[in-house]
Image (tube, rainbow, N blue to C red; front, side, top):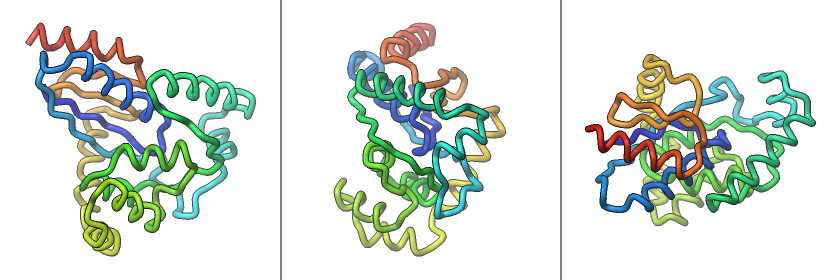
Length: 201
């Protein structure tokens, strides 16, 4: 079974969804052989490198007042904790394209934690290089990627691929190219869906 996890590191529900999916896969064990692929999606592709205040940006983009955003953050903290992900206080949104270029090459959990738990800029090369070293990747190779256009065309092509297939929000979990599970679902939802899909295959 191939699972394409279409996501953006700027998406908090993607952090919840990934941890939930991985919990479901642990519960399933070897009963269903799985290939998990991370696919890029930018929620804020026009975001400048310096970023923007999160409350102001989200309020403008989604038309939600600060009180509603605070309620959503409380729900996210609760849902994240239930699947082992810690949300910290993050008041800024940054551009994530360079993070996707390295994610195309490796890194997913480290960047999600840096952004959502520690409020670090996932587009800052110093942050990305430190994370590459922390997860055992070749830091000089990572630096070469970031200092060039490497993987830029590939990331843009994969983003177009998913957009042309109707993906307009994340996380989107695509099973074998034909089944879609949307949103940061709880582990039991992923587990039940994967078992049903495998049984019907």
